[in-house]
Length: 510
Image (cartoon, rainbow, N blue to C red):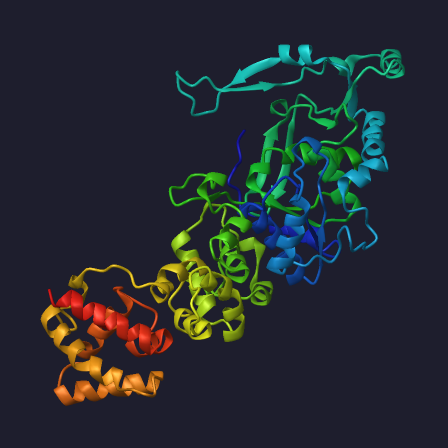
């Protein structure tokens, strides 16, 4: 199948866009976690609608009962709420186009009714073929890049056998309740052409298309057929979905033509790959919205990052709120090349959000992570303040603050720092000099500790680092910490910080 790389046809697309109010939809299936690709589809559909002052519709596509996962509906609703992608219409917000759950629509007989209309027009037909007969049609096809060792892909391409049944044979089979499906009747000659905003005009030879099933033997519609019927009845103007659906779109086009309906504007989004340019899979550990939350990312940063997977703002601005995205988003500028999920960039972006977060909000979000590490009676709020600008995700907190709970077993080589001009010998001297001064303090506040150390540095005429590095190393046992010697000592308290300094003196004395 060939997808020509034609330019976007503004004249045709603009004509469609001006026909009616912009209405987009997000139509997830309740089959598990919210994949990043699905989240981007929802986000782009939301941004298109809101940028144009239109409606964003949530529709639940649950016709594939075998793939239904308990709890998946809650995941969908929680994700939409957590990301701020609030729908104007949906299962609990009827805007006059309901029901918004496909199984409920199926129960009303909507899909069978429209399938029968196509049968009457000769655009679809009843198929009574058994599984054995369908299996006999299985063939192997090879892609354009297949080599001699490639076994290709097995498919079943239907041979239109039941299209030629007489009216009497069909009525007899229906009366005897012979299991059947209803298939789309696609012509064997000619081409089917459609336009996509991102990929331009695409033409496909009809002989490459299969007579896809519209109504399954259990009476449920297939995903593709239900999509077309629902999008038309709900007056969806723009259909946003991944480019894996490009190969199915000619069949959608044939259905719209068969019904005599106007097609929506198609916006097929590029593939999302990992850093190795392979399809982002569930095994990556960060392929879903829930995975990312579990890894300590916040929803605002995730939404911002996902918006840039295939699109960029006109001024190349990267940190944007949802409202700012609505203001500047233009789906015509989505790139057709695969988008790379850059974890380094997401971590950076999340860190920027955390740095700029209101203090109280940050504390409330960070508190569970801090409590996983700290059980002692310490100033948790102060610890949160120190760590706020030094992490990229909430999971980073543990490694940043674990020394508050327990002094790690460290190597005295840490006291040697060329830039600070410190080593084991002068560090031991500094700690021995400062220990009695700390012991004499009645006021063990951060300010008092700072004044004690700074006064000592001035008195001895040494560099700041020569006085501060040994103390911070002694009380933390770590190469880097959120906060310096004064902050750490005041949080630990007099007894614990002096205990740690004595341990350091002992280590350095051997």
